[in-house]
Amino acid sequence: MATLHTQGARLQDRLQTMAGFGALANGGCNRQALTAEDAAGRDCFINWCQALGGLPRRDSMGNLFVRFTGSQPELLPILLGSHLDTQPTGGRYDGVYGVLAALEVLHSLQDAGHRLRRTVELAVWTNEEGARFAPAMMGSGVFAGVFEQAELYQHSDQQGISLRQALEASGQLGSEPCQPFAFHAALELHIEQGPVLERAGLPIGVVTGVQGMHWYEVIIQGQSVHAGPTPMALRTDPVQALMQLLPELYGRVAEAGEEARLTVGSITTSTHATNTVPPQVRFTLDLRHPQQAVLEALAAWVEDKCTLSLGALQIRIRPLWRSPAVAFDAGCQAAIAQACDQLGLAHRHLVSGAGHDSVYLARLGPTGMIFIPCRDGLSHNEQEYATPEHLQQGADVLLHTLLTLDQ
Image (cartoon, rainbow, N blue to C red; front, side):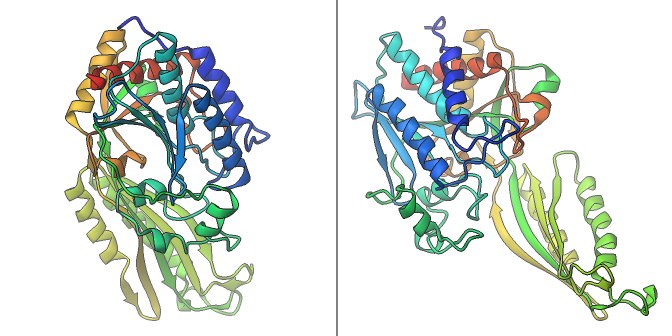
């Protein structure tokens, strides 16, 4: 069935409709997890699925599954999907594309009169972005046994609304427990969120794995003094310490090679007065590498460097979140590459620099990811964009990968 294709125009229409839920003035979306906008988008998605015979259900983390029963339901199912929640100023494709392209694959198979042997479970995972509730990838994390649901229920957003309250208020609290079920394979289609494929002029990336990640909060404690009377040399200024520390951190990560990543995402001081030396600086660190051993060595160095006292000045580091490096299933990678060959689409293997729900699914069973290019590598940005051609090509690869794994 190498000539079977998805309908790009239908996929585009659904992406356009979903972008209307939480639409922003500059073309992006604010559809954060378990908001009214998120619930409305999910309801729309459920309607599309039910029109094709899908059977929806929610679990106790709000994860949404829609079952499309195969001709041999006793076989282990294939899990497809991603997430529908966005960043506060997010784009139209991150996560959403993986959900709606999977739906388009199933719709196209129905149009062709082809019934799969295996049941497909189409998943929409809760709070993948971590924008409203921390940490990220909550729904898939509880599903995989990485997080404790009872603990996450107590986590609150900036308005003090707990996850449990948001689940109830949005109507997303399901009746069945959030727990893993066995699957034959899991596939997630996604925009790359980086520039590698676009710069290489390639339409498809076969994802080999995901970088390991360590998140930290670093606190530099100094002393608050008046900006005028206190000479520079006599200050215990945490901002000066920050300026000395950051070049050392960036320099050490640069020594680890081009696969290493360090990001300072937030810097805040404990005073907003122009004429006062702040007593404290807080900043976040995002440290990444695809090789777990290298990541651990970098993390050990960073933790040591950010735990010291310099006279009255103290630096302390607090781990926020850790996600180990992940290698995706070789069989899934081979099936994706085979689909590319069948469709005549050039591809390359690459590592994902971003976290995805597939990170946790890979702990449970064979898992694979497919990337398509996004313009200028932009994501978590209202200007996020993927061409109609690439969107359909990715969906076609997902379709033929599914057909291979169904056998």
